Amino acid sequence: MRPMKTIDWDDGSVLLIDQTRLPSVLKMVRCRSVSHLITAIRRLEVRGAPALGVAGAYGVALAAFTTRGRDFENFAGKVEAAAQQIARARPTAVNLSWGAEQVLARVQQARSIDEAREAALAEAQRIADEDVAACHALGDYGASLIPDHSTVLTHCNAGALACREWGTALGVIRSAVQAGKKVSIISCETRPLLQGSRLTAWELDRDGIPVTVIPDSAAAHLMRKGRIDCVLVGADRITHDAVFNKVGTYMHAVSARAHGIPFYVAAPLSTFDPDHGEEEIEIEDRDRDEVATFNGRVLIPDGVPVLNPAFDATPLSLVTAIVTPFGVLRPPLDWETIAAKRRVI
Ligand code: MRU
Image 1 (cartoon, rainbow, N blue to C red):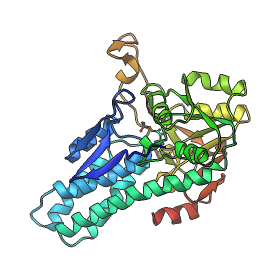
Image 2 (tube, helix red, strand yellow):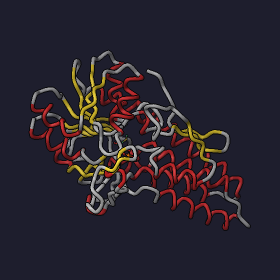
Image 3 (cartoon, rainbow, N blue to C red):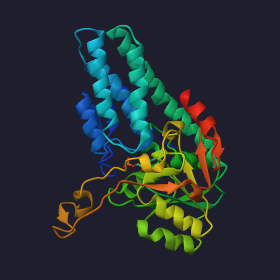
């Protein structure tokens, strides 16, 4: 394995891998302002729910260091406004607003601007380190679900690039491989932004883990042919009735159920949303151009409308198990325990 940090605090700024340039170019972007970070989040230079949680946390620390105020109250008000803008940059992954709120709370508890800055950075660093620990912990639990000599289908990218390092779904795969299992991955390309072919394939190949890319539409065919042993994906938000993840996940869950294949989800506690249900959650709608053009070429006649929802919701009834840093949970979930554990991360 070749560890890398997707996102870090460096010299008063947020340093991140520009994921829009992969797999051809591995380049870092340095965000010195909150507005630059928000643009990076919207453009998916940094993406994936846990990485967005860390971006939200570092973003509020950045706001604390770049904001001036007449007095502490004035300063704290401006940092709060920045935190709200960061939290709203993308609506579906709950980790983003969670990370921003955790750090904002430290700012609000402080008694001076200097104390607030110090506390904000310490909390953001803690959240970033905790994300790494959570991925390793859930990876070790989840590895037991992956049979030796198996083929696992995944969708989008729930790897090191979607977290600070290691990954959730791909963290489980890395832990299984580290434990000596032979595992190969089928990565769905993940139209329209191709996180599966550009990012999942890149990071698994870099670590020497066998990976094959398929068009999203080939998944059910391979399940029918007996070529898939289980499906394993990440999550952007887990409400009390559904798992939100990259659009296309729901169709894999339906196909997996139809073929008697286990459907697993891997997620840290920051991805759980005990207070909401499916109908209350906004699914991000993205630009027409992501579907209607490729490399500057027009693919859809002008005037023909496009729908481009970035996520879908899979009912918990289709989920075999959820891998978390405190064990493998099988629905129905014990939400009281989850909420209590989530309060202390
Ligand atoms: O639009 P993206 O690339 O941010 O979507 C990411 C996903 O849907 C991932 O599967 C999810 O965040 C889990 S990442 C561990």
